[in-house]
Length: 152
Image 1 (cartoon, rainbow, N blue to C red):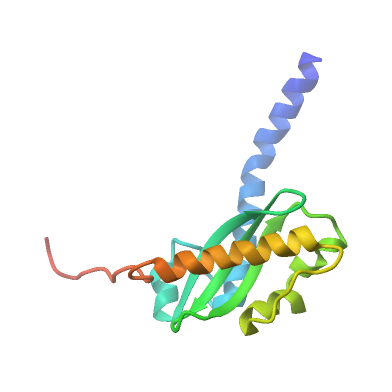
Image 2: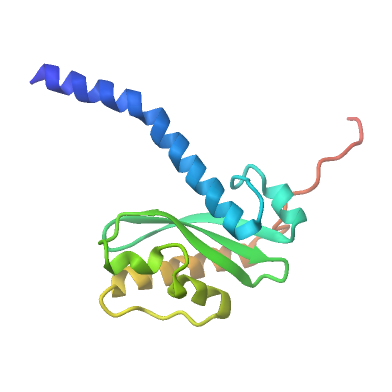
């Protein structure tokens, strides 16, 4: 029993770095889709702001667990895109969360509604994105200040 536990712990240590690297690569791909540039959030926030976008990463609780997503806001505050980074929702029902989903595209037009059969998931994402939008609207100076060239 102890040997099995030690083996599992060893496998986890061996795969942890790869899992983190894959998650980062996935996030960069999502940002590339939303902003047209390879970046991470919030590490490259200034570069994204210079492109007229603010990206906010957030999490909401769906039916099967957490749903991690990124919302892109245009300079005028409107939602320019929503992409899901990862989720633990039921396959099939959660297809609304996949890249290219017409349902996710509805956030850009304001035409997004709960989906029959995936009501908890869709309502959670709608409420989560709404909360992200309220926090974005309340944030002062949505873009970080540009670095100063002046010497201290």
